[in-house]
View 1 (cartoon, rainbow, N blue to C red):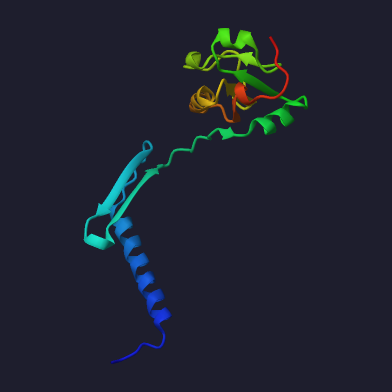
View 2 (view 1 turned 120 degrees about the horizontal axis):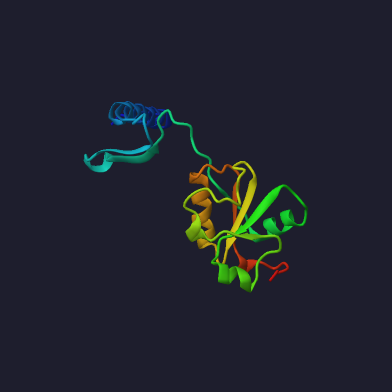
Length: 166
């Protein structure tokens, strides 16, 4: 029986061959839709070496920015300093009236369909919160889709430990 002395080199070589073959397979089976973002799925069903890949592909379009999430503690620290930012509470008006973060303005999530008049500068830093963090994520995504470039989501007022304004 023949014993291989350098098994690790054979394993590394095998892995390299599989990686090259996968790259060639992907190159020939992936398509990019250049006029808008698309999702392509490629795959092969051949037993233990099945390869399935899915991904969002971006054509030649400029990538939109995304919003950032921070903790309530980080937001509270930021708000201790005066700055060129706006804090928006995306709860309903009645919830806002019950108490909100000092200096916040109310723009209910449900009303964000077009660019809010209260937010004329799309590059201004915008901090977004709601009651528990769900609506603030939705509103932040809507704002990004409307072209706002500096959107920071920081959860819900339920976690706020600072002052409350009525």
